[in-house]
Amino acid sequence: MNIVYFAWVRERIGIPQEQVETNAQTVQELVEELKAREERYAAAFADISALRVALDQELAEFDAPIAGVSEIAFFPPMTGG
Amino acid sequence: MNIVYFAWVRERIGIPQEQVETNAQTVQELVEELKAREERYAAAFADISALRVALDQELAEFDAPIAGVSEIAFFPPMTGG
Amino acid sequence: MTVRVQSDTFDAGVELNAFAQGRRDIGAIVSFTGVVRDTDNTLQEMLIEHYPGMTERAIKEIVKTAIERWNLADALVIHRFGALKPGAPIMMVATASAHRAAAFEAADFLMDYLKSRAPFWKKEITKDGAHWVDAKEQDEDALKRW
Amino acid sequence: MTVRVQSDTFDAGVELNAFAQGRRDIGAIVSFTGVVRDTDNTLQEMLIEHYPGMTERAIKEIVKTAIERWNLADALVIHRFGALKPGAPIMMVATASAHRAAAFEAADFLMDYLKSRAPFWKKEITKDGAHWVDAKEQDEDALKRW
Image (cartoon, rainbow over all chains, first blue to last red; front, side, top):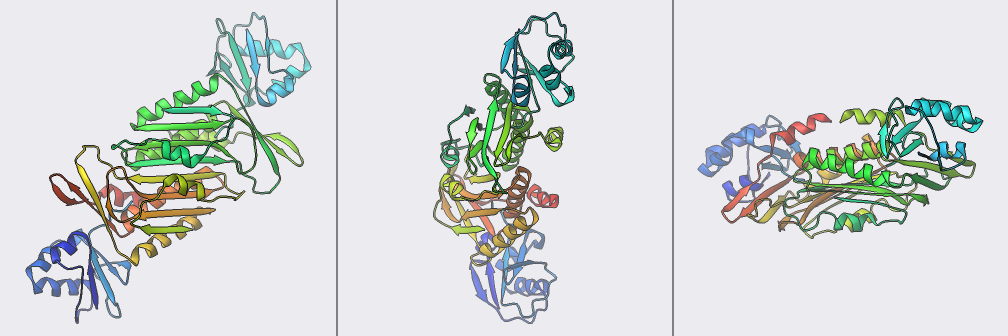
């Protein structure tokens, strides 16, 4: 599964994307796994309410299942326009 | 006093403007005077609610006094934009 | 503030680019362009009559009100009169502001006022004859929003 | 429908003129141009990051919704990414419709959605450092209007 990061999430984690193997069922479970890995993940995911997630390039909720998803993106609220 | 007409008011009365001498105190009284003059005025002023009036190029009401006014304009509701 | 009442045509793109150039306090520019519409393919010409003298004065007053109320950096109104062909530009409004809400609202406000308070009258010449465009009740009602 | 996501600059006037040309069913064209603002004269550069792949798809979905909901004749969105200088155009929206209310509302709607639902992130580089622009609660609230 490919994970991509944008804006300050990318900066805190230090890489724009990575491949991960996971048994997590939901986005939330994946986030907990990542937070347990290293301090930089814990810092990036400290406040979930400040983050957004997209599954295969569609906005989703953190309790969404991730089975069959090939790309997960984490980023702050968008500031386009 | 100069009276000017626009759009279908001008077409019904047949002239774009004219000088009139009047003792009318208000727009309404002037309109009654004009209506009494000729059929074309009666036709143009038949339905006052379909008309607008400007006194010296400022929109006004039909019960407004006209003492000191040098130009009165009659026209249908505007359709700009 | 720029207000122009003219029979000549204008280029909306050129006007938009010239509008509010070179200011660093502008984040949002909204423009509205009105075009002679001919959905049924029956219109030959649109004649726009106006009240010389009152027209510019009335528009300037409306624009001044908008600039003050929404604290605009700048505003533009161009309105044509005379004989216009289908597809021709009739008029244009542009507003420039720090933020988008003000620019949108002010442009919308200006359009509502130009529709019902600037002394223009439209006459449509079609194959079947000529008729003055009626004012719409909804245009008058629109003013109550502000 | 025209949707472009690009690092190159664009000319808002040229885009406005090219938009919705040669159609007789259009009476109203509204455009919005977003510009890099620098009121305090401290901004050196604005960096815009985006999510390639998702960006165009998300914008096209938003534009499709607007065209259907307001029965637009056409709609345009251009949005830049990369490093932008103060005064540079960031993005542009244009809508074309038979009547003005639809064109205004649809452009306003598109802006609200682009602000909060298209995957762009702005970073301001000033003399004193760099910081990511925070999303505003009012931008999220604005979506509830629609």
